[in-house]
Image 1 (tube, helix red, strand yellow):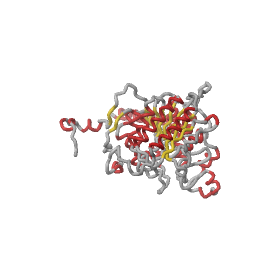
Image 2: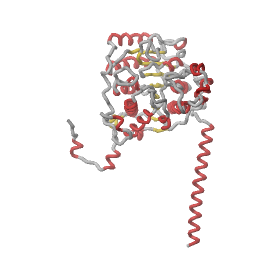
Image 3: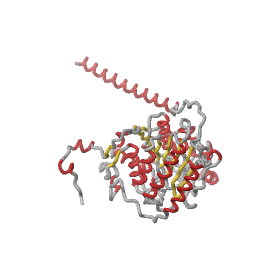
Image 4: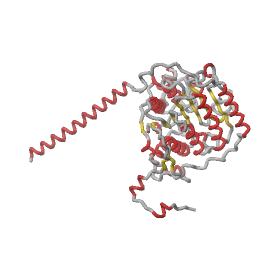
Length: 456
């Protein structure tokens, strides 16, 4: 049954009005966050391999939906430069970075199995064409997003190409080569005394937890599937940190099939007291889409609205927030989710039907909806008793925190803008060449006009 609205029945619009009508409803709130969208279209052109579940073209689908809903009109758009090797070495070992720069599909046979094993290269993390470029592009976007938060140019900075939370200091892991999240947090720590990291990927955010396991300046909070065998095999509730970081690593291990209401309720019951206890200066939210139902590698029953509600809840505290992507291996659902969560950051509500004019719209058949039904495919093994026990253990950890940890005041580093002298020089040369070309064209035009006058 099709229900016709009063507006559709009594009014008609010209083609131009229809084309420019936004496909969203604006929430009339008193505070509108400044949102920046950091993307580089080149990142979606890389290919892990035919059989590999990681599909970077999901980012292209996301950008098409964002453009189709006209959300770009409400954001600051940035095309960031690539991260430099020196910037990535703020976390990763030089030996590992040298390897990533040198290895290609053509020369991989020159490296011994011992070297490939050392850096965890294999089926999960293959050598593919442009691997280093791919890593530097998504990392550069996360670093740019962190700089916009530091400079207070943005209240919320989005980089859907980032969120690769498994990469370690010395090795690749879980489809991740460079840990852009760790690098962005290290940047934020140069300005903010404390940063809270929240991870709602179906897999444990082990790389980020490991990087900050012994410090109280970063609190990591991860909601994920855990049974001891599920990748990466870490993330039990008893992993609480060590040294100064003891009780600053929080893990919420979940079982198969958790559903919308239980997940949202648990998320809010934990996140609110965490924020009250820790008082972060900035928040990084990893929005891995493999926690959706029907994901190729996932095992939860979450719908897009439930996942997005977590982002909405964190945003409601009005703390500078960086939002990144992560896992997600059913591209049509990944792109729908990240478009929806972009709208959440912008305080607008999108129409359920997808924009008809976007490229690849047939990819979203048969429903063509922003809110596909993704629940009920896996039996829910999370009993109320089990979830209550997890919540109780997290609250017990928070009791050990005697307020937010303090940090000694120091000068703000002078290089937070992230300028690259070589890049700046190249841009100046390009601008000078363009100016010279433009001037030559104008002079040729005038000379031609004078010659015509003389002939006349």
